[in-house]
Length: 177
Ligand SMILES: CC(C)(COP(=O)(O)OP(=O)(O)OC[C@H]1O[C@@H](n2cnc3c(N)ncnc32)[C@H](O)[C@@H]1OP(=O)(O)O)[C@@H](O)C(=O)NCCC(=O)NCCS
Image 1 (cartoon, rainbow, N blue to C red):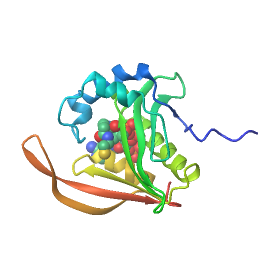
Image 2: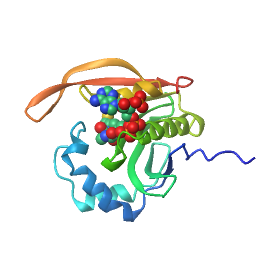
Image 3: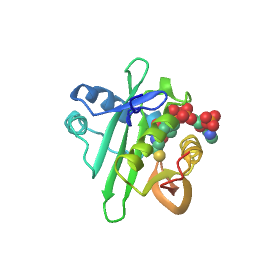
């Protein structure tokens, strides 16, 4: 049997960004429900989103559009960013922007697929992310796939007129569940 694609999970497939993804990215980044717990504050222009939609993946910034395996429907994006070869470490950012797909396992599958890609295809040793305290759904998903809370940056983020703590979470090679 041929090997399973490293870009495929159980529910989703990671593919490159495409120019036609731009309207989706632009809509999601201006949806206050989607960005409630994201470091997105100022409006994004279509030009900025076109630039994001035109990014191709490199070791330093492996960035993917997330589509459903069943219909090829675009539902989000995920990036393994700022990889440092000496440390074999990078940051991860995820957004399932299509709210119709929340709570149906797509975020978990995207996390597993992206992290597996990081370990098995990029030879990473460590993947790190930040999550705002109170983003309980995201934290639950990260813990479910094996991330551990490593630090709490107290009152590190200010939005909606109040400070929130920022949790630093990490996943090491061999810990992905
Ligand atoms: C966070 C996000 C990636 C999760 O994706 P998702 O597809 O909704 O997640 P899943 O359906 O795979 O899993 C959700 C899990 O959280 C649980 N959950 C839902 N709401 C919760 C809450 N308020 N508190 C704790 N757990 C919660 C669900 O029960 C489920 O866990 P289970 O499978 O053990 O039952 C997605 O909602 C998203 O992108 N949100 C907007 C952007 C964002 O916050 N990105 C993360 C920034 S750090």
